[in-house]
Length: 624
Ligand code: ATP
Image (cartoon, rainbow, N blue to C red; front, side, top):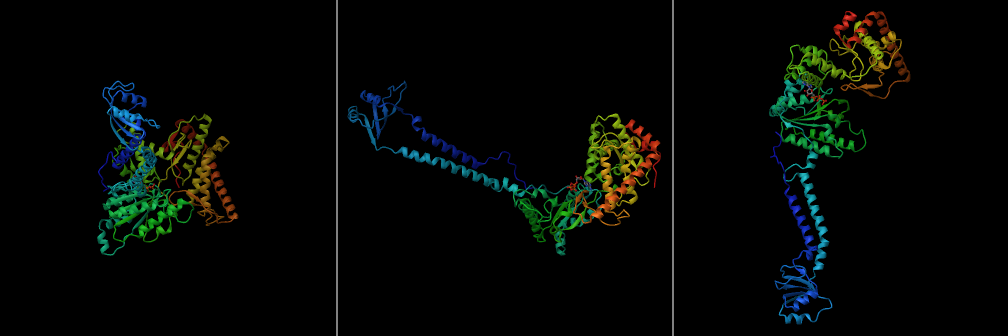
């Protein structure tokens, strides 16, 4: 359970109040010193008036301090403009002295007191001189106090700075997620299941002297459920789950990340058995010594601290550290060595069966229509990760809500799928001739795919602009493929160039609409030639100039390790592959011209055609 401190709604810092009172008192003292004469209750009267009052016998007493004289007058006396009674007065005796004063006082029987002159001016100067220093020191104490509170948070609390150094360890609760919430991923589940036993009964393992892995690295494409799996492990074992993202370790200040790591491990050790989950481990665990500047210093210190903490387990703590990454290739070898993140669990993109299971998990609370066929939804979502499927269900539910439907039906899933795969529908003012060219282009793709035996069946053709595309021909593989045969790949090239070929045959010209098709076809042909040895002239030689990332599906440029002559051979072979594919596409289009015209007309009329409508125009699909 998280630390439970009584909630302090409006915390009043008491020291702050004391400091404020001191400062106000000092300011008041300052004003009382500087304005004493102005605010005193005695009236200042001129010496001449004083003498007159004395001679009139209205003076009762007088106190002399050097040249200063103050005293009491008879009560009914009016002085100056004041009409009310006043007893006190002040006056200044001329510096040259007044020899007649003492005799007059004696004659009027005035009570006289004489004191030596006061040196108040000096005192006041000293105090005024000291005051700024007193204020500065008071401010310094106040600031120091505040910083201290920020660091320590007062008595036992958490200050801003300590919070910053400790980072935001997100959860320290026992998750209520179990392996039932993780659909598919059977291999990964099997790998981590034995850790559940260890976390549940650590003493049993200890007695037998068994060494359980401390670090487990979960690897896989984004959204495949790495975080979910880690939480499910904690939930299944009933232990606390400490989670932090690797990027949270990286701060501008060197040492903050290391401090956060220390704090995280300390907390977990205090509450063992526990699971520490470090998401995006690659952001902190990259190979060290590869960069310059403070950013890398900070990362390296953090990484060193993680390694030190992993090494520092005494074997008694029932703590398992799970790291998640989709870039295992960039991790520092030291992090992967035995004793650290030595167990590697790979989470793959779900296949059709797993996608059905994930759909079932995420539609548990969704009211579904009777027409829903999970198999069909799963078939239509190849390459979707668990996160994508969760998103699909959510999109479908939102569409149903927008339609004011009571249940989520198959149409909602279809629409949500198209939205996620192809983008949102765009309203563009497309000119009729451009629209015709679009219909020709998409029909070309569809016709070629339909008549090629190894090509994936067409699921939908549309000339409604969606996302970045003006039109789309959507094929769906009948089954999951783990390797791609040459026949299939060659036919894929033909389908890609089918749109452009149709434009050429029917409109006698080509357009920029084939931009993406050409780029994709060239990349595929290059891979066939330089990586998969599908060109007879070149043979099985690795001539790739970039590395495909295992989990991100992106190419990363690499220095070239082959000769200029080999590069030219690759270029020639790529051209040949594409040339052959284009010729084949043209042949198909010319030989099925009638069917193609049919399809173009239908597409222009309906804008979107499904499988059946396409078959109605083109006849049955040719099978291998
Ligand atoms: P990333 O690498 O981007 O951090 P990840 O692999 O950690 O992603 P998660 O955050 O665990 O992915 O998953 C995202 C969402 O996808 C989760 O909320 C979860 O509901 C859903 N999900 C992913 N895989 C599965 C699965 N196998 N079963 C059920 N739900 C899943």
